[in-house]
Every structure is written in C-alpha cells, then in structure tokens.
Image: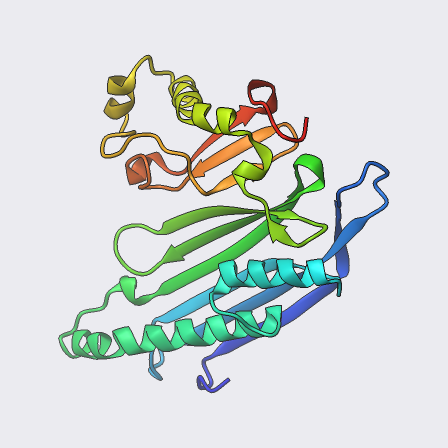
Length: 264
C-alpha cells in the first residue's frame, strides 16, 4: 500500500477462534463456522508531522466454508459491508480501505492546506470509520447477520447505522418478510408497530410521540431492515428515519405469538 511512512496497516485473519451457528434442521447436525477478518488502517492526510488522518477499523465475521450457500452469503455480506463485487472477503475489505482513503485525501487535502496557511487547526479533519459485525441463530435455522457501522467525517456528531441480513443457510439467499409472514399478518404490521412504538416510549398517542421527536415527518412504515429472531421479529429504524437523530436507532420487536407465520 503506497501511503507513506506514516501509514499504518494491520491486517489479519483470526483463524484460531471459530464461532458456530446452527443451520436449519431439527437434529442440529449442520453448522456454520466463522473466521474474523480484522483490519486496522490509518492514513495521514499529508506528510506533515502532525497531519490529521483517517482511520478504518474492521472486525467482520466471514463464513469459513466452501459450499455454494456459504459463498453466496459471503458475497452478499461483503457487498453490504464494503460495496461492489469482489472475488474474496479480504479483497473487498482491502478495496474499501483503499477507496475510502483516496476519497479522504481527494476531498480534504486542498482545504487542509488552505487552513494551515491561515493558521487554522481543526480536529474535524480526523475521520474515522468502524465496521463491526455479529451473528445469531434465527427463526427456523436462519442466520441473522448484524452489521454495526460508526462513521465520523467532521461536524458535530458521528453517524451510526445498524443493519441485519437474514439468510436461509441451505440456499445462501436472503429471507424476505413475505417468506415468513402471510399477507394477513403483513397487513397488520403498521398498526402492530405503532402500538409497540407507543408502548416502548410510554406514549398514549401520536402527539406524545411527536413531542419526543418521533414520527414528526413520516408515518410508521415496514422497514426493509429487520432481524428474524428465534422468538420474534425485530424491526430496525436507524437514526433520522422515523425520529430525530437525538432519539437514536429504534428497535421494535414483535413476538411470533402476535403474528401468524408460514413456518408454524
């Protein structure tokens, strides 16, 4: 990597520790093993001694298997983590770091030089991007793969994003809500989510929710972001989606006891 002497690059695969996730099957005989990809990269903005820098930290679980389903899942995971299509998990991470660092320098180098010449020293030139993942057993042997991203690119606050990918481990394909819920249950979701939102925030009506910064600019909707857990479906709304940024991410769980599923 050609980033100069101040560039720090730590890249490794933690093969020693494997994580197990049950696949579909009542006998529990099938399992997935995981290995963790760890990347830590610091790239200075210029060659000066006290140059600001952008730092990328990645701790991502990759399925350690060669089956077609595992390859499908790894490709989908890598796409959602790093963007683009790549031949391997590691090459996807490497490409992401390279592109992010190049964009950082392209966007900020001239601005930073101008500020230095004017005697201005601002900490907002220090960027940070962290990606951490986890995985869980889900409904019917599905794999729930959660992605947590934290990004700071100047300004007064950092940006957080939560995402869950639900996989059928037999095919490696993503599972959709309509694969689990019949049309009647899907139609009930907006009202059930509204009730759960009111309960979660201790409100009696929409006006009280709006007083707390929730549903001011939008109505409740069924997000494409959800976790098909063992006991219920957790719907995930990131900050600024249905509430003010200060409210943060909103997680609403509806137990299967309140829903009729295709799998029952």
